[in-house]
Image (cartoon, rainbow, N blue to C red; front, side, top):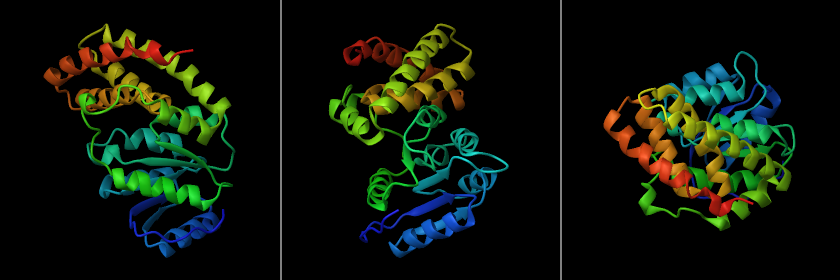
Length: 246
């Protein structure tokens, strides 16, 4: 990773990395940039830290002992709001490939290669840190479809990885539609909404992502009234996704 210029954005960052050398390097770079870094050597430690403290961003290594990055991310997403909404960035030794699909499905917000430069990592941290952990705005306040965001992510992760996201989206949106047809069984709705939200962001489906994340939270909280409302909202957005297909 290449050095980066300092910024004025100071964040509380949780770094989950089992390699001691890699952990020290990333911690040193981030600390010098003014960030406050808490380290975890495996996924279970990361989950414990994320449960106990609210961070601005989590940097999650994919390959760790005890509990890997995907499992830790899924567990963090089960935490109560706002801890469960913390932005999570995947760190992997691989380039952007089929691993990206698994990251998005698990609930990660970004997918970065350790071989990439720190300029990009810094910009990601600042962007996610500014957004922070609050829940997304209501669907009415955001674009239904943002082609600029879709193109930006396609440039960031590559056409092949984006194609895999689209394939994954086709699968999980069908699973969500099926789950929505069985009212009262909230657990599969929560999981399916979570998976759809993880893909929708990268496809520029902003309103669908927001409403799915809200639906997931409502299911976890067993809020029947809110679930009933959001089910109708999500169904409406799912019916419009043909606008970005093809």
